[in-house]
Image 1 (tube, rainbow, N blue to C red):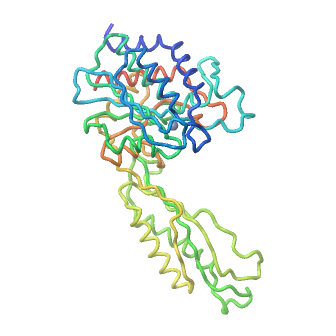
Image 2: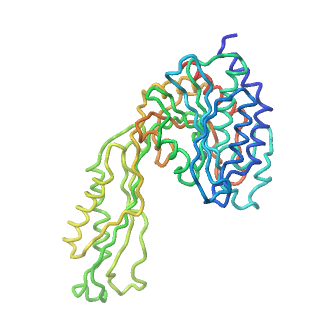
Image 3: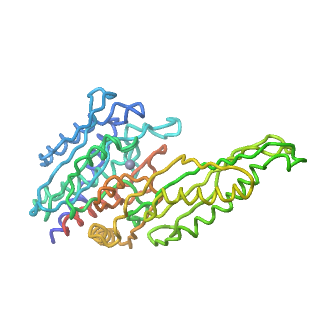
Amino acid sequence: MTELKKLFSRIDSYREELIDLETSLTAIIAMSPKSGGDGEQKKAEFIKEYLKKHGIGDIKEVNSKDPTVSCGYRPNLIATIPGKDHSKAVWLMAHMDVVPPGDLAKWDSDPWKVCVDGDKIYGRGVEDDQQGLSASVLAARAFIDEGIVPPVDIKLLMVADEETGNELGIGEIMKNPPFGKDDYIVVPDGGTADGTQVEVAEMSILWLKVITRGVQCHASMPHKGANAFKGGARIAVALDELYKIFPAQNSLFDPPHSTFEPTKKEANVPNVNTIPGEDVFYVDCRVMPEYKLDDVIARANEIAQKVAKESGVSCEIEVVQRSDAAPPTPADAPVVKGICKAISDVYGVKPIAQGIGGGTVAAHIRKEGFNAVVWCKQDETMHGPNEYAILSNILGDAKVFAHLIFNA
Ligand SMILES: [Zn+2]
C-alpha cells in the first residue's frame, strides 16, 4: 500500500472516533458573549487535551483579552505537527465558536446532544465549524497514527470569535501573522454539497441610501413645488451608468461582473394628491475587487448631483454598509492547484475556483497578502435548526487535507 493509501484507510477507520469527537465538541457550548454565551475557553481546554492524548503536544496559545467572559480571555490555538521541512507549512484553520440554536421548537432533537441518523450527525455546530475542525484534526492524526512524517509542518489553527466579528479570533492572530508566504492556508468553513466550490475571492459590498429633496405641494400645482420622487426616480435610472463606468469582467464570479441595483424604496407621502418633498431609495452594489469603493461612491455622487440639478431637486448619498474586498487569491496559486487536485482525486469531481458575495473570514488573511482558500464539502445547514454534517464528507475532507499535505 502506498503511504497516501495508508493515510486514507486510517482516516476511514476513524468513523466512530469522529462521532465521539463531534459529541464532545457539541456538548461544550461555545457561544460568544455577544450571543449570550461564555466564550470558547472550555472547548479549547478539551481540544488541547484531545490533541495531547493523540500525540500532538506542540500547542501555542494566543489569547485575546475579553472581560465579558468569566475566564477573561478568548482562546486561539496553534498546534504544530512537525514535518521534514520546517520552512513551509499547511495551515488548516477552523473556528471553535458556535451560534445559538434559535427556536428550540424547530429542532427535532436537543441541539447540544448529537444525534446520528445513518450518515448524518445532527447538533448545533456539527457542521459550522466542527466539520472543518474534525476533518483537520483527523487528517493530522492520520500522519501520526501511521508513523508518516509529513513533508512540511502541519499547523492546526483554531480560532475564537468567528461568528461575531473575528476581532478576538483571526483578528488577534493577524496582529502578528504566523504564516509564511509559501504556506498553504485552507479554511474549511464553507462550500457546496458537491464539493466543487473552492472560494478564492470575494466582491466588495456597498449599500447606498439616496435621499432626494424637493418641495412638497399639491399635486394639481406641480409648478409650485419640486417633485422629489420624480427626481429620485431619474437618479435611480441614471445610476445604471455605473455598469458602464465599472465594466470589469471576472469569470471567478457569477455573474462575472459588478452589479449596481436600486432596491428598497421608502414610503414618501401617504396620499395620492401630494407631490413628495422628500424621497429615499437604496442601491445594492457588489463590486469587483479591482475597483475601489471610494471611486464607486464618487462616481455615483457625480451622476446623482448632475441629474438632481437637471430635475430641480437636491440629493445626498449616504453609505449605510460597506465591506471592502481583500485581494483575491490567484486561481493558479499553488494552494488552489493543490486542493483542486486533492478534491478531484478524493471525490471524483471537477473543482472550480470561484469568487463569492463577500464577508468571509479568509478576507482577514488575504488582506495581509497571504493566499487562502475556503473549502469543504457540505450541505450548508449551518445556523439553522437541525444543523447536520455528513460523516462521510468529514472523513472525505480529512482525506483531501491529507492529500494536500502529503503533496505539499
Ligand atoms: Zn463558520
